Length: 201
Image (cartoon, rainbow, N blue to C red; front, side, top):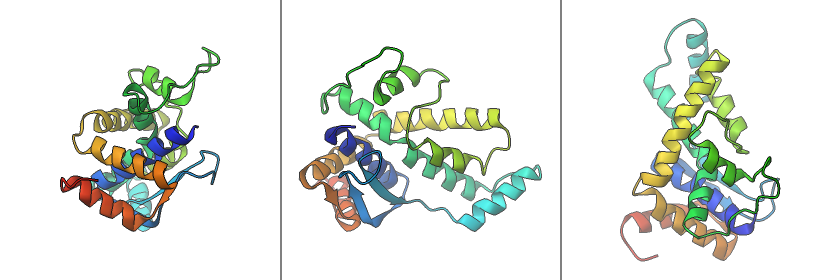
């Protein structure tokens, strides 16, 4: 991933976190080479390990997950899924250079996301494992988990492309990351308030 695409990817996680009401961790976000994706964003979603463990036992017993726990798990999934569609839209809008397709049989991540969003093909995102782990609390069958994930991917794609609050936040976060390489959780929260309050950034 290029520095620009990494910034937009992490900005997508942060913007999604703000929209779903998550807390940004004090560590904030960093686009230096800190792990295999060359960036990370720390977003605390409102999940309680005990609650989702109890939800899992309820589902395996044939019951229903309580709405509050299901909503929290879904919101955590939106945050994990938001990185690559944000990159895709940023590329479409000319904010980052298009990804060169070296081999048509193995196109790059965001190019594949654009092609796959209208199909049932699993999305090539490094955040997939987190989503699969979360959905495992809600789904006992693989086909159910796959269908549930597909719905969440479509909702995330809509949020990135159509929610009027998303793009101004993503732009502000990406610009800050490109300017400074890292931004603290406090600065991210303050920047979000500034953007949402209509103040110049």
